[in-house]
Image (tube, rainbow, N blue to C red; front, side, top):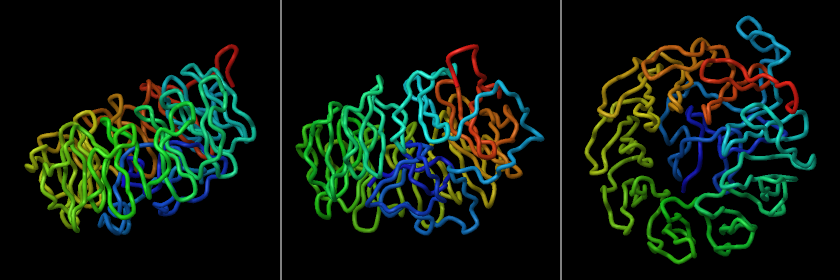
Length: 397
């Protein structure tokens, strides 16, 4: 089963919803997906806990939520009344980002201009995906359109963003799929269900997983102990106690022989044997030796790897491109990656050179030219030069 996690190897579900309350995140209940701010990385089924990933007990975790340092970082952050600040902020998506000011959400554009205010009754709002945004009120989920209209009333126990024209929702204890107008494309009937990807969705019926077509017909009948969405023509499946990959016809493409296997990205699949991590190609051949203490997926030609207690990056040939030296390291996005040094987070380029000095308590990924950054209990946006997004003459917060 596919669940989303931040790029940091912090273990809180991350599909993108800003929430009014920010409790300290604990290991998620996999039967009840929860949406939070950061979105990235994925771990299927029982590969998801720190124990099952065989991570060191003292692996530092970045938790996205309420700022714990109310004093901020005044020594390195210039105070400027024109800089836009928020009580929470999301990555940009489809030209807009969600921000929270006190108990009210709004969507802003890349200039900081408010283009859509949401109803104050909402206690959670996600960025747009396929022109629909997940909303939440009193623990029930629905959808908003880009004009601010509620197109699906909050009524579901959980909801995922739309992907390939379908959105997974849960009614009671069964999962189904909505059309963008809120009608059911596939009636709730599944024990668990994933987003559509490459025209298929993994779904669990009783105790086995198979793959659905957009109309709900089984393309690959339920037969696997666990399964992921397709990526680059392959999907992770579990057979017995091992993980491998199938092709779109449901045939084994890479034999289940790994203790952990993860979706292909940029022609490389991340795998685990025991407590060590590496990468294989689409024929199952090891490309990056299975010798690292942890690893993230490839992004823009590099993958973060853990060596002892320090993070660095390897290229797709397995060569160390950036020496291990960081407390944490994230995926590259738009040419930059967030890293943590001496307790603060900044951004580096593909050569490992610092572009934005470590000065933040938490950050998002660069999307559409901007990244959110957290300073104490306030959120701002920075561009790729490190300049903060400032308020315009008129029209923004």
